[in-house]
Image (cartoon, rainbow, N blue to C red; front, side, top):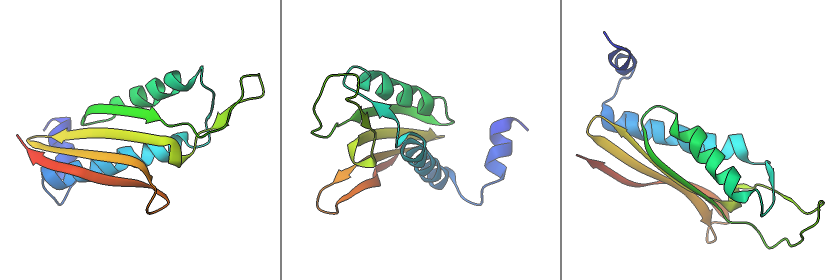
Length: 125
């Protein structure tokens, strides 16, 4: 039995539900691993790329795109930096297991006043 078959044998669900589960893990990792990270305009893209790289090595990730939407804080001297908050994160992660593909997203929802993580599509090949 190979590693994928062994991993699959641990789940009491099919590929679709496993893909949904994995997508949730990726969203939780993005939020809980990086909130609080200091950055400024000159390091923002580097932080986005580091987050994308870290998520992309996790199992079943087909694609990941992260954008940080900074707040309105201004300044350009050595004391002017921000700490990343959930409200600043726009993330899209696509997970694929077998023929099942799930796209999960995270972004600030102004109606809810909350950085919402949600499944935006579920499909099969």
